[in-house]
Image (cartoon, rainbow over all chains, first blue to last red; front, side):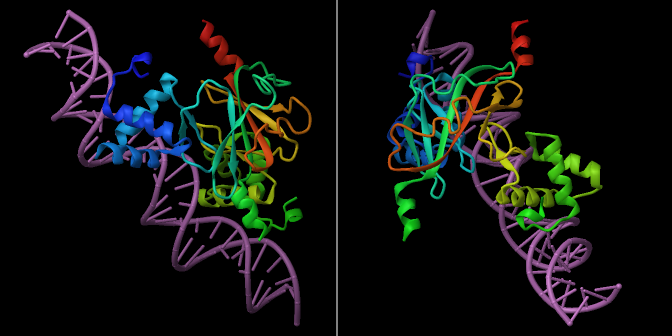
Amino acid sequence: MLRGVNLRVTRPRVAVLSAVHDHPHADTDSIIGVVRAALGEVSHQAVYDVLRALTTAGLLRRIQPQGSVARYEARVGDNHHHVVCRSCGAIADVDCSVGEAPCLTASASHGFTIDEAEVVYWGRCPECSSALDS
Amino acid sequence: MLRGVNLRVTRPRVAVLSAVHDHPHADTDSIIGVVRAALGEVSHQAVYDVLRALTTAGLLRRIQPQGSVARYEARVGDNHHHVVCRSCGAIADVDCSVGEAPCLTASASHGFTIDEAEVVYWGRCPECSSALDS
DNA sequence: CGCATCTTCTTGAACGAGTCAAGATTAGGG
DNA sequence: CCCTAATCTTGACTCGTTCAAGAAGATGCG
């Protein structure tokens, strides 16, 4: 999998990759924690580095809703979006609601060449919703 | 306008508000610059404070595409979205392409109560597009 | 108009995510 | 097995943003 994108196979890389697979939408700190649990001491720099390398290679996707730190997920290339909870910051996946490329045709694009539409739904997760009612 | 939302009318506030009106999508630093040009010395803290107050009051909207610092705009409540240039970071407004509330109906919302859909289009602005061709 | 009060601004320090840089390690090809 | 270039470690540092304490200013009332 790493070889498929011309990257050397190192222990930190394998660990980061499986960490993200096992913990979708995890922030960098959590990933560092998981990786350290698996490998022992690993520098945060290495994790940042690996995350960037994998993101650039297209194996990971970086998401960063407002007011949150960077998070990573392994689902790539399937054009899905995210729901973010306004109170607790939980993130869930949402499949594209209107076909293959949702809203990709902006009405007035000002001459921009658009290649991607990113959608973030804001609301409250079930837990926070019911917590508000009580 | 400020009184309408129960905020005291101070020189920094007026200056910030008109700065954002005149410079849509400006980042905080630019706003500080504009405000200082108008008023003389103003602390960055005051600007941050005012921006937050106005955002909370609903007079401004804060946007923050990935890899960019916070930006503010005065168009609120009309459900429009943004195109962001991948190379130079320029931002332009895009009216909602599919009616009042675009994509607001996610297919599988995981029980989330959704109240807003935020759309960011990624691409290249006319300048950067042609710069790439040459 | 002047005063009391509470909000807002100034000053200065602190925080945290992320980045930069230099040198030690290590994976992979020959 | 060895060489070379990519990768990891260590540690310092940047930059946007926030926190805190005290001074200044706006608003309402007499």
